[in-house]
Every structure is written in structure tokens, then in C-alpha cells.
Length: 182
Image (tube, rainbow, N blue to C red; front, side):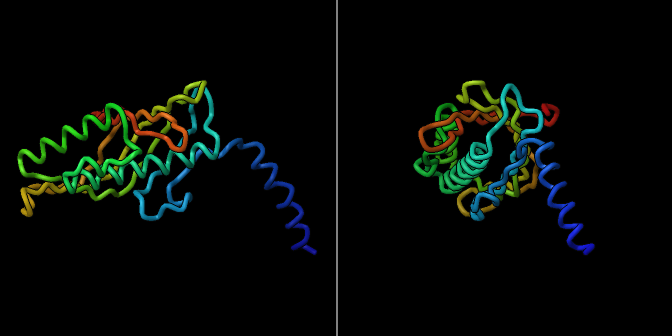
């Protein structure tokens, strides 16, 4: 009898609690079934001027993780063709230049991506752009040929602009910012 009463109370209070808390405010790439991609946790607690719908949050987290995977692969192999379709605009142009510079000097960069804490800070009323703040933990190794010349573990911060396309969100701007930025 006590178990039945607990189930009735839980059955009433749980939906009531969910109804009062509003929409889901966190998305992660692992929840989207993308275990091979970098971990991205996207939060949107105080997002304005509009909230993120669940499907949009999942897509942004997945597509941002895919962009970072492509970025990492391209820098490690010094191959701009590996930047893929998730990176566009200024972000892609800057990365292509960086890869060209690396090729000229004979170096390459390897990132060990240890996860992103991403906060959505702006989502335009028409859904045409989203601004994010990313706090990423990276292992960074720089090689001259096959010789390791630099290695560090760092927390980096980036301002990010993503825009939607027909079937994905695009990383359009990736700007490194100082620790004091957010």
C-alpha cells in the first residue's frame, strides 16, 4: 500500500515539477549518440531574446562538436580539405590560412579535445544566428615534422557564431578570447 501511494505521489509530482521548470536547458553530444565526437555540453539558462528548442539544441551541440573534430583533423594533417562542411565563412578562411602557414614552416598542431562547456548567449528572433561562449579543455601538441617541440594542457575560451543551413548548423566565426572575457 505504501509503495502504491509513493507511486501515485511521484506520478503527480514529477510531471508537475517538469511543467514548472520549463524547457530543457542543457544538451550534450553524448546524448545525441555521437560518442566519437568531442564532448560538448551546451547550456542556455539565460538565453535571449528567444529560447532554444530541444531539437535545435541537440543539433547545435552535435554540429559544433563535428566542426571541432574536423578542425582538429585538418590541423593535425595540414589538410584544409578535412575542414569539411561544418565550418564556413571567416572561421574556414582563418583555418585555411593557418594550415598554409603550418605547411610553410613544417609544423603541425595536434589537439586532444577534453570537452567543451558551451553557453548560448544570444539566439536571434528569426533563428538566423546563435552566439556561444566556449570554455574548452585542450591538450595541445606542436610537432616539427615528427618531433614534438611543444606540449601543454590549457583551458581556452572562444566566442563562436553559428548559423543554420538546410541540414546543419555552421561554425561561421571562432574567435579566441582572453580568460577575462567570460
